[in-house]
Length: 307
Image (tube, rainbow, N blue to C red; front, side, top):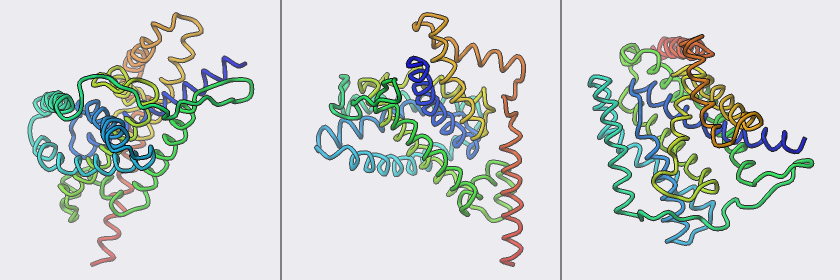
């Protein structure tokens, strides 16, 4: 029973991390129609702002450092959207995708120059253990689950209850229609990329207690986040959540039947199975399209009311 609880908690913790990565992919793809392979570098940059600059050099508290890191990365995301993502959205998808890979490499080199090429740890950050019934887990896992759940709920509320969020859903469904309705798609993309970079920073902060902070810290996690999006349904936020949690639980329970060294294989094996059985993902993209159509209808109704 103790092992079962530990696997459940760890599975949900990593599942939420994969879900957040998949959501970041989804946000950029929905606004720019661009598969962003620079996300791992953005997560790493957020972790360095938190652990190296604000906590290490400026000696600020963990929570103040976390807030400042999210704000700074949001501003950086806004600038990057104007300089890089908006122009990339206008060129062929293959070249744009390759450009994001090169951009991610550039971010890593900037980290080496501005911060340090050497790995380090943030001492005392979410390092305690927590008792759940008869099982013991880390404080970091509990915080990952709680923060991950809060981010998902707030994001869904933002997309469904605010004008900006509804506009983002309209752009996701049809950029041309959104522009026809008077939505400034460039501003919308800037907001989306800023939000994406803020989520990347939250992911980076959450994985700081799990690994030493280094430029290769995201690695496999980034690929699993991409896999989560494919499993759930690429372009769908509910799909990203479902895919991430499913992969997190599956890979952790896999250690009961195979050596822990091979648990990473389960995520990619699941992708292959889903692609063979249902290439559009478990949710098939239907949920995302339905929500976007609702958003378009709400925007049209609002436009009629305003004359």
